[in-house]
Length: 347
Ligand SMILES: [Mn+2]
Image (spheres, rainbow, N blue to C red):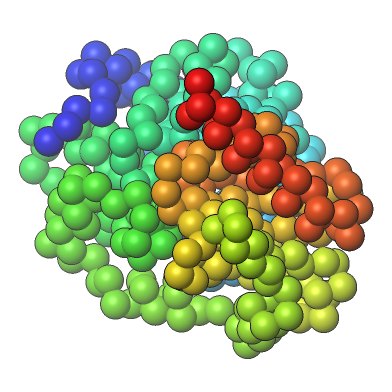
């Protein structure tokens, strides 16, 4: 087994948890399965240690993840920022999960920056903003934050005979399953080991799979059809495909947060397409999702042209241009990227 962290940091985190009286757990905006899985897992883990905590997310999570938040305990910052302030002012320990940069938590950012609490980051994205935290557990060599958290919790409970609480195991499994797109990307041998352990611990994978991948609305399925049939463009010369969904498209299919989850992967199923993008028009910007299935770095691509970042093969970003200009902009950016790569090769 690879080691993702030192024993010392595990002890530091345990000490911080044991000393804390008001623990707040946070994750990134537009929370996905790994985000919600990791916060609910950590909350469940803390509660098994007799520690109460409060989870705050910047905005609403998709409905298909609501089964992980039984009792609707997660506080949505956007819906009640005053309450957020009360929680954050009181916090003496903040645990940040599944994001690398504080700008990813929107309105929570300033609270975290101003807070005197001990701050812990546990994440799997490259380039963590380490200086903003007291303790950082970060590696890109795992499938998901949930996987990293799994190894960490195992280590923290070293020697204890008690089994991992079911809610913790279930949440961790969901986060890993969604971040790997059901075991199709970023899967390492350690990921299978984790999955093996969790199944042995009683996780019901069929039910979870059905809840997550079989829990979409009819509108979402029809939006997917529309996206593939009418909104996808393939640029053969770059091995790239992209989908643009305007506000009108989203409205037409009764868009709810999370409905376009996974759409960005679809062009990659086409032979010869190894770069893929999804553009969805929001109120004041265009949300960009990027994927690659070879060594084309969408992390660099996003940093350079899409005001974002992420992993080498999965990244996000934002654009502030009219939606009608997106096709041209995307093609121009690809061309520039390829020209640069070519220049580097020629040198
Ligand atoms: Mn993740």
